[in-house]
Length: 131
Picture 1 (cartoon, rainbow, N blue to C red):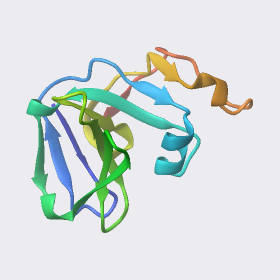
Picture 2: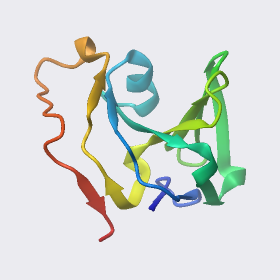
Picture 3: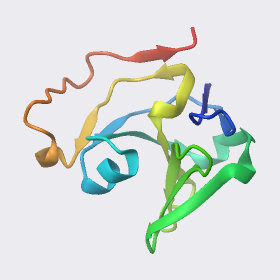
């Protein structure tokens, strides 16, 4: 199980499963949405994800007609995104995880946009929070 929250703590969630894979994304949309050089995401089963506290603080922004980015409207922390044409799947923003096992990235999307100075070794390390 994973737990996580936004920066200000108003939004808190649980995910009742293990992450199967994590992905680093260097596309311009992730860079702008995260305010950094990459997004670190994991596709998750929506039926196992629950906002435990703060649902009323979540705001959706449709960047394209099919894709919504969901974030805390108080602090701006991105929590997840979803696509209308990919039912039952959310993309969890892994910087919000506070407890549980987060596997090392296995994929890089838009790697051609990765800054030259950044070296990424996939599958070398994992992160365990709150243990």
